[in-house]
Image (cartoon, rainbow over all chains, first blue to last red; front, side):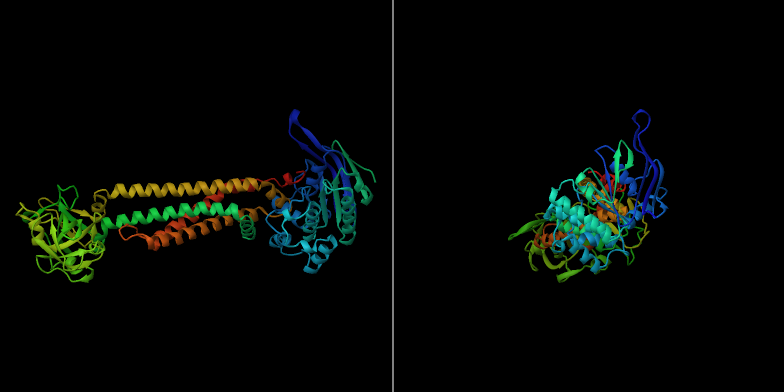
Length: 224
Length: 353
């Protein structure tokens, strides 16, 4: 069974002549252990797709389910819990809390999610895998872009979600780093058994994807 | 609390400046409150030390003991028990060749009545003869000593200081306690006058005869010259200071919150509940105000130690507690203003930025 599935999802913004259909009957699914790429130019609807998949907003119509459970009918509090427990976000600008050091970024997760997070040993292994073991006392502004991104990935995985959603994860990386990040996501999907969804317009990531979806003008088509 | 403390520790300069401002406001509030209470106390110290409940004055004296005269006829039917005392008040200037002149209030009292009996001596003894006086300890601060002889209102007659008493101020002036005979001499040309007032410790005591009229102590105090105007001025200033501190805290927290909106959106996207973010903001406000107020209290305490005794400041725990609680409440109210923005933050805004 797919971890996440979208069926005939439509999202409409505005009304009347100002109405914009950001998503048009989108169908999508992702499984554990897979890297799925959602590609398309700016304005194609990728961010809207990501927010709906991540339970940040609700579709105008259609069904979004995580582990077979419809998340479109959840209350704001339930959506919050769903994000906390099921979905990990890696955002474009990494968006670490600026006044917390790396270690404290994980402590913040512990404060709001008491159970089900990675154990100390698992976190140590993850930090080792990401190559950021020595950075735990550093603050975000003391880290390079690549290091911040790795910390953001570690933080997203720390809550042990089933789905990892990444928004333009290679937007500001050179080719060498793109290769590293691509491999990393692929390894993480396999070794941690997560469904990794990468929203990007970077074709350099295609070689690491198990499936590729193309988005254009709100419509989604499976490419691979 | 975790987020609140971590952010303050990381952004020391930013939050330090807010604390500095809260400290200055709270220091000013403590200073003005102490001054207000100190001055009010100097107006009413003696009246309160007598445990006054009712005051009988001449009904034409505009509720002023200084202006009041009660004659034999007025007092004819007065019931003067153990809880009542006659007082004769007269404004005097006390002079001594080697000491500064002191504008004072001479109070003639009777040895058999409770005011005389309950005088709180700091040193020396109570005046027993007509040429002896017991004076407020303010005279001591001004350099007067037991044995010094005072001239009152330029008369050649001298009065020997035999003791210093505490809590003996009225209308901000130190009191010179002496005999009724002396007071009558000071009130020359009014042979029939017996006293300025009857002071009663009995609540509900009433005596209205001829020109005599009874006033509750609250009304009597409100009518003390300048008392109400002075208190209202201070209350207004302190009230404004609270409003200013509320605005400062609210504006600072609002600006800080607006600057952090994207962070809040990101945290909300990651499933951090709104209540955690709201709690962090309120806690932050409480910490900032608490630190500012504690600093204000410490500096106020040091100030009170350094200020000369002549400055009428009353650094009492009750004022400090009321001021501190007031500031904390102000801080909490101030932090509620940006909370609306936090609750309305759209986590979807974290995507694509």
